[in-house]
Amino acid sequence: MATVLLVRHGRTTANASGVLAGRTAGVRLDEHGRKQALRTAERLAAVPLVGVVSSPLERCRQTARVILDRQSGSPVTPLEKAITECDYGEWQGRTLKELASEALWSVVQTQPSAAVFPGGESLAAMQARSVAAIRRHDAAFEAEHGPGAVWAAVSHGDIIKSILADALGMHLDLFQRIDVGPASVSIIRYGPARPSVLATNTDSGDLSWLRARPAEGDAPVGGGAGAQAPDEPGS
Image 1 (cartoon, rainbow, N blue to C red):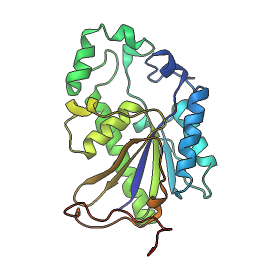
Image 2: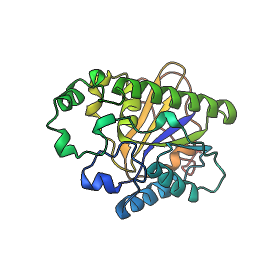
Image 3: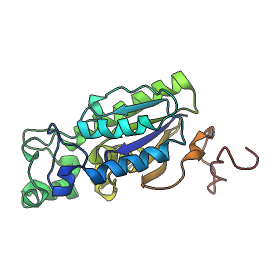
Image 4: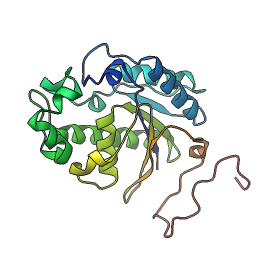
């Protein structure tokens, strides 16, 4: 089975000022966000990626470029509109402090499956399109490169949270329990029986173990021995 690394873009000027950027054009990484992206790129450099799929928004494309600069190979680099930021409609460009006083805020926090942003999309529609896109790309990379393929998807916080919720079998109403920080890496393998969530919201640690061929078949009862890094004895 292929492995997807879900990477959130690094911190932006809007993140730092508490503004809901949404799909606003020209929102870029700030200095701290560029450092975060570099740190993530250095972690991913240990893993030969077959593809780096990015949201078309600038902050994700910036993060993806930093990742690609640290790759020794030539992964494909498609843009994917279906993993772009949620369409927050009239909420876009407003401060989180201001939005917290809106009646819809409590719905977003406690019953996100019922949340529809005025002039925008619903969180349920956001999840449906993003999950479908990730599963489609994952199947395509595995078909072309085999079950050991590893690829990255560079996207946004709510998008990645919704994808993780789906992989974990969680109702969308629980997705606010998941935290996804800037430039974090979360890892999913979509097996024939179920997805396996291998990591969430990581911002440090060696990822070279992902070069090992992933285990096939059922989940090991008791947890198993875990992945063996290529440079470990017996590999």
